[in-house]
Length: 310
Image (cartoon, rainbow, N blue to C red):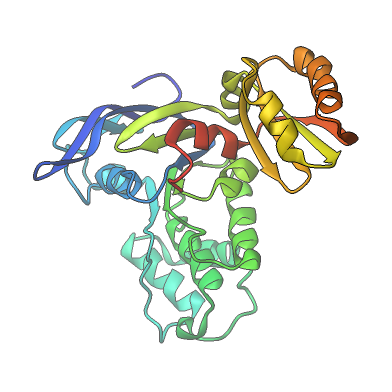
């Protein structure tokens, strides 16, 4: 295992008949980080997580967790992993404390340890004062409880499959805040297709597309690799005239127009600062606003996987 890696994947493949769900992916996840596994639906994220947890077998390549091959791992390794599937299951008649006590007993933990961890995890999940049976929980409450149960064994690695999918904005924020609180305490590896979630909480990210890792770096590094800047221009008059004037320029990577506003992705910001005002004048328009800003993770994602895959 690469020194300091919680997960190391080399040439991992998974075939379903003639279809390749995973096509030789390589990935190393540093220990102690919150790591985002990003990709459009159907990219192979859940398949990868199922292989890591031993719920599915690879067709080729290897995957190691905490230095151990997942195909040969036994209960000793599994006791160091926490896992939350994309659709977690609960006993609806149980309360949250009852469920966590149940999970603790499944791990064979001492009674005192179960009680201590149940109290601490309920507090972390914001469920200490909730007495309702789990069947009456909101989706966000269930997801927070799901993360709590995945932490009952104090895992060195926490695997979360789409933990914020289908949550409302408040539920998403609560789950993300819980994930952030784990930074440095355990390695968190979570899959998602929601760009804003990754940008908010992750240290590093890998982007999976059609079964292949197309990017693997910190978010800041991914943005630098694009080597583009964004410019926003707002004009008085027909912005289409400005778009037409700039569309053939070699330093313009992309143009988006919305009403009187034109947004450019440019490869030479200094040249653009000189040329854009001149283009506004040539088009006979008035310049209302002209500002620059950094690229977003969405810009990187769209550049790598295409605009129609989310």
